[in-house]
Image (cartoon, rainbow, N blue to C red; front, top):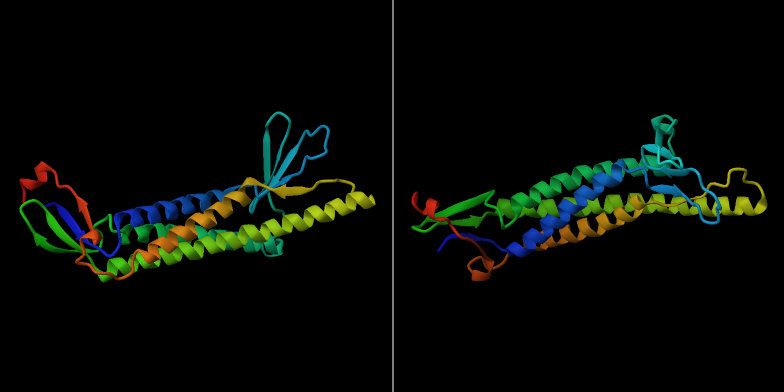
Length: 236
């Protein structure tokens, strides 16, 4: 005997979903504040003294000594390039949604007793049952995570496409002799991390949603077990 909870999902599924959704939230926060969405290409440059990077909120330069200097975009908010403005909105929404998704997934998970109903008291422990509200919260958390993953995926993919177009434009300008600066930008680490966040959040959300499916609650495979300690037994 011990602390049992009747659920329609295994603890393993709940833990996996919660871990991936939490990881996606952390990655979303990093992507939102990172200035490494785009970095200048140094291929073919013999001596490169300055590295440049761009993000959603800042443009930075790094000199040969590693000193960093950043400034925000000079344009007024509504005058920003569509890719920057749109990506800002989507990534901020993704951070908010993934935060709520993480919280609701924890509450709706079979490994927690939040929103669970006490069914019986026994000598060695308690019996709990996951209510429909608990399952619904877990499903909503998974859906929010999926939406957040899609938003950050769209944002980084949009920005990545703009970088590619700019790279080709600068390349043609150099060939034609019309470019006096010769700065070409390539994908930074934030683009790759954004795609990792997309995969983690989407997969975690799908697992969370599937984990709330209705099943045979009386089946032993849908019971989660946690041993009760000796001190707790004394008060039963």
